[in-house]
Length: 84
Image (cartoon, rainbow, N blue to C red):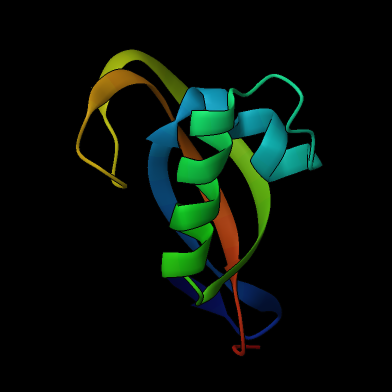
């Protein structure tokens, strides 16, 4: 997690890149029902995170922080709830 006196605290997770549009823009249209359920399970388990601010460092074949599976990943930076 990062913090400074003038910025909101953030945290970064490596997650499936396919989640990008849903996390950053709220657009779930490109995801399967299974992917949507998995994404909602992630968000329910990581209740300390808020909005996704960015998606960076797309890797064609990497391990994600959510379920340790291999595939296309990206680093997502989130706000941290309750920390200013």
